[in-house]
Length: 290
Image (cartoon, rainbow, N blue to C red):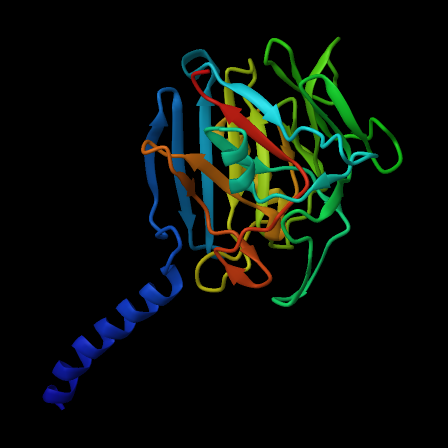
């Protein structure tokens, strides 16, 4: 019996190590970490195991130190009515030489029935669900109400506001729903349905910008977050206002690392494949030190 136990221990260790490798292969390790990406820009990975597995990736930008400039995917003037060629978030970051990028608004058409039956592919025409502007050029008015909330606005002075447009709109992107208003979590947010999520928030005086992407739909790694959990996470970080962007297979966080290479910080999932980026309509990007 003792020999069986002795031999069982290394087998168990190998099994655990094998499972860990299987569920973390080519994905960020499920280990909490925190470090500086650029001066005034910090990355934080938050890992939770209860009430379910959740891995959240957070970028905190200090506007005073980093002097960021915000940027929304521009229109394609060869296309009309706000239609854009679908790009992954990595392609958006590389094309416009950005330092940080996340996916943006929801869009149409879209479907995902499997690895061989999905839309869009890179370059396919898609339209943002809501209002959008880039460098003062308003190119998408929304499905029905041209100013249907929520909308994130960026002024020429690079100040962010939600649902209250500046005198001159410089950048704008619509979202899924507000999560935090005036420091209070919005009432009635879903607290059960778990999905990958993307969100952006600001602190009370607008100095700190929070970009959050939660991985999901990956058993034993990260199940995702409900809107309520997402709001609670942003509030704990210090957000006074926060808005959810498109989630699910669209949720992606990308940076240009210190070697100048594109690095995906989260584990996106599209067509049920972990690590696969979904091409989307528009995005929210950040220039650092420009």
